[in-house]
Length: 148
Image (spheres, helix red, strand yellow):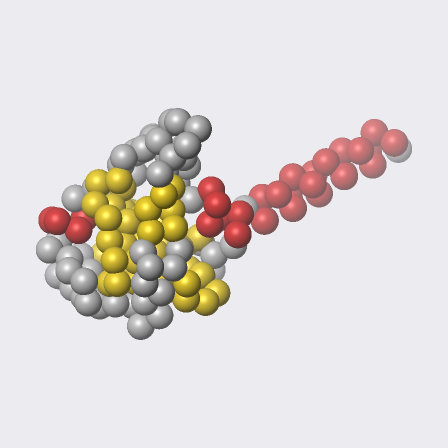
């Protein structure tokens, strides 16, 4: 009986972790109609982890950070293994700032990248996204959230 109870508790614990870490997806549609499939970061844990420990990022994919309220969010590349373009969007989804080809950082003190402009969304995408799609400050991006 005791063994059964321990197995039951462990299964419940694993299920809770899996449910807590459930990945949600959405899309960012660029002005040239390119669709980027985005993994959503909507919780503090997801915001902190971001794309850390990833060695690759498939073409036209990335992470969309969705915050509760606009603020001047900063990012760093600690424990990131890939270069990224980072794009800050206002609450009305206009580009307010971007940084291209941000390098990974494996040092204890990594630089942070951010905008003094208020942003509600931040897109992390493959390097070259800004340049290849000719994105500019003020461009409006469309965001779609895929329901479960």
